[in-house]
Length: 292
Image 1 (cartoon, rainbow, N blue to C red):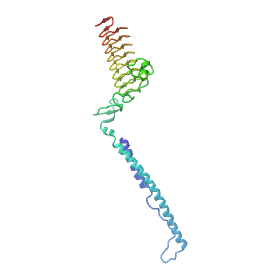
Image 2 (cartoon, rainbow, N blue to C red):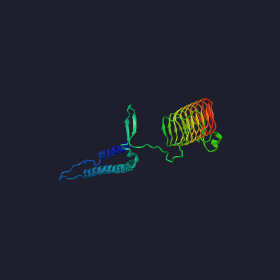
Image 3 (cartoon, rainbow, N blue to C red):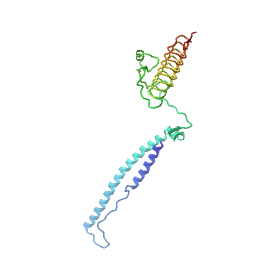
Image 4 (cartoon, rainbow, N blue to C red):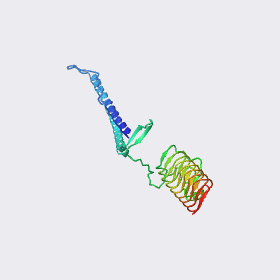
């Protein structure tokens, strides 16, 4: 913005110099014949003088016409620039003067620094409408080329149900809004989520995958903290880590291990291998098991 204003000022300066440098004065008249008092005037010489004056006047008239055209064009340009400058001056971004600083950080890296303000990113529609905008993305955000295909709406777990509801069954989703995205090749198709790590997916509102790879958070308010191939599909469910664990029960949780499943409501698997907690409030930890 400031650079634009500076450019406009330079233009006006150059414009002024251009007008002043244009010949604004009549060209000198070169009269071919001079007469002195008492000397007879020859008609041909007088006519030659008149012709010279006429030529000079015609030349000046042509110059004046050219200058009038130039001035009219410059006035139109000035009006357009004044309108552009007014738009720039009325832009609220100028209010960031003093709050936005381009500087070098402690390690010498170029940094855009916000001071004394909050930074908010919105999609321009509303909180829950998704349009692929309003996300805070760190990194190149490449497509998710490998991993399980998932529905754009996590409540549908198979292709038929997904597409029957008008949703998209795919591996790559970048259509969500108001998500915090970091890492690479992650997918996000709903709103208010967080997805970090590599080739992870979030496809329900307000869910989190905070690390690992090939993890999916598809239950509302669910989370996967890390590991590989873990799925939190139950409402408010969680998987803390491990491999290929699934928390599909409402508020169910798996803390770690491999191939464990917490499908019961509020059930929990703390670790081990191929363990299942299927009943409400069931708890499994390795070889230990407790039911309610």
